[in-house]
Image (cartoon, helix red, strand yellow):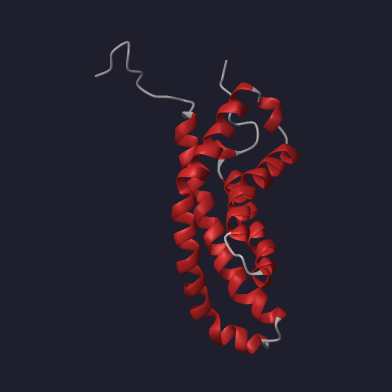
Length: 161
């Protein structure tokens, strides 16, 4: 039973719902990419053979997954607030996000806080080479759900008039 105050269905999701969906997907995709890149790229750069990388892949993947999961859980509320704010702004000014170029740039900007927290959480200069891996996985994690889901595609946040 519906009343005049309760619509039977909504055609446009609320900004908070979109932000939550986007953050959950971005975290999952980014975490898998982080684990994969962190388990393969640094060992190859430091001279491990592809066979050695393959033999230690599962252990490195899980180890990086534990670290990445802790960081992701700690940053989840902050990331949700940032994405919620972005969705709210874009719903008022759709031109900011109407093109693929705008969506790619916004994904980069939304990935920067995660990258900066991880990069600056280390005080040891030897860990800074991890920053490109963090940036690549965070950026792809924010961008790929937008490509795959209709509700997150560029231009989809605007309110229907």
